[in-house]
Amino acid sequence: MKQDVFLPEDYRPAEDEPFMNERQMEYFRRKLLDWKAELLDESRDTIEGLQENTRNIPDVADRASEETDRALELRTRDRQRKLVSKIDAAIRRIDEGEYGYCEVTGEPISLKRLDARPIATMSLEAQERHERREKVHRDD
Image 1: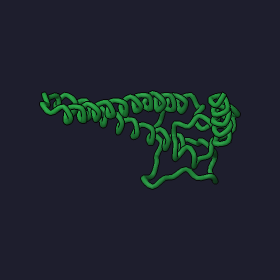
Image 2: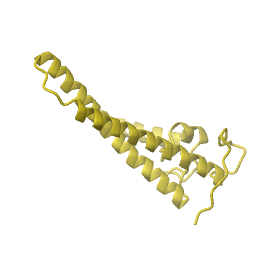
Image 3: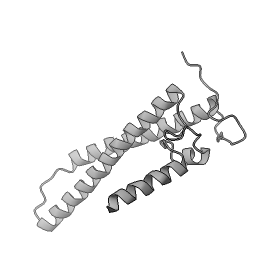
Image 4: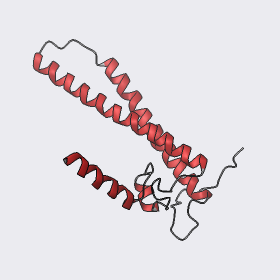
């Protein structure tokens, strides 16, 4: 069984400590779990709101506006559902000891990048190369 890691409230990963030590791993695990919980709470609120707001609106313009709002909300929830699966994948990488390393180069991903985007799987340089290639192929 994994032992709990003490993490001070104000802890932030620093460049001067060993990369992906226990504290950093625990910091990112908690960050990911908190983010996932927040997304799932928002999703529950949306579902409850959609169920409660099912009503017959006589005005065609109002009905169209409400349908547009619902469609936008559902698209947002779909993006968040995909985000939750990326969060789960990042947590798996933490459990397997692979978190924080670029899947392309194997090099460490910067702590600043991971703090800003904890689901990142590529270093900034590898991500930029990937996006440039994607753009070139898209323009063909």
